[in-house]
Image (cartoon, rainbow, N blue to C red; front, top):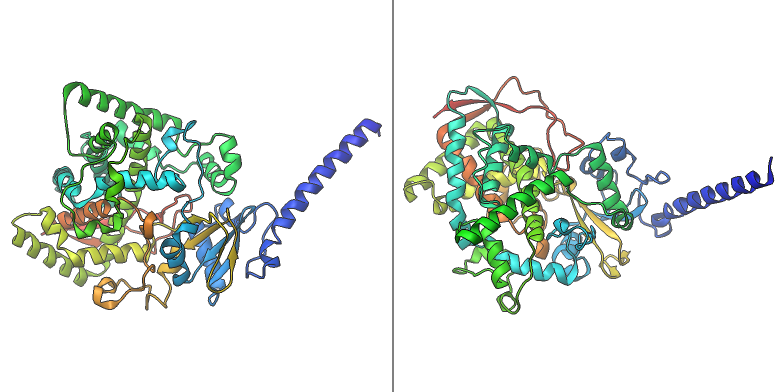
Length: 512
């Protein structure tokens, strides 16, 4: 063989050998630290079933948790990234609340200058996240939700109209159109008309915003497991055609409102106020707003610079987080109630009592529907719409049990495992809304569909208001049963980040 080729082959094999050795070395991480773990594959770690799309990431983490029933923590290799899987609820509380200063970030760094549309509360880190969170929180206070309620109720009237003359219906599609109309109205200030025109451009682009193609799947793996590489490659969370579409809508809407002095009670108007004043004016303080953790002393201390692209980024987050999650939560709530007619009737009675008391299906009536809220929460627990929580350790930390984690290492909480844990939820396979009765003393941080602590979902109460209104509006007019056409048991779509069924869930509906 030619000496040059021999040298090239030697160099090539040396490089391959070095890469393989480094991958092998990474796979010794949890073994060297004495943390229980599954044997990893080279380069794929424990994530090979996810890469092959045999399981969703949530299902895979749940299976691992089941293999180690007595362990508080489990070592996990997210491809070539050692990650700590947390099972114990007290340790989860430490991460999310008590020792939050060590776990402030999600671990998805983005370059705000190159990708301003990716600049949102989910991706922001450190002091930047804290400042923006405090500025945005007043948008979701009780006073602001009251002002947005009329927009939600207008969508509800169209929702009921869609079900006229229907005996059977695939509710996920209808609920998705309702959720998209609510977001269009409350976030973008548009009459999106998805209920009336399901094939319109707004819905197509809104659906594309969270569509999980193979390319998007690979990009997400790289962004979550190899953030430095993703940053170097300038990967974005959003598709370019989606961002161009919604950027155009927001630019045109802001321009029209400023030129014509037009104002509307929606998310975009409040973001414009934040652009102009540096803060959002707060109305009367309500105890329900405490979860937002608003620091009034920081609200108006300085002007807050917010570009139209950053407004779009926040609105896109509202869209992607609020559409699929609320749609599935409402569908699963109806699904569970359809299988439990006595509970469905109990919910209906509460709805009718509160509507009669208030005189209409008003904001105040919705607020008093506590049993309905318990049903929605139980559906969210039983089906674990959000499959996991991520946190990045920002500085070295030692848990009370002596387990240490270093800065820039990630922790994951498997919500499917947590929400089906018999220690916190006896008979977890059963639908029991009374679990959320305040007198039953549910363990703190054992129910986390919205997260908890300072990073709790900022729009949690908006989402709950929307879901409660929608379910109440439907049950005021119809009784629901599962159609024999629905194939059961439902299976999970491994391509969706939410717990989404592969099957069409078809309901039989009867006018009340």
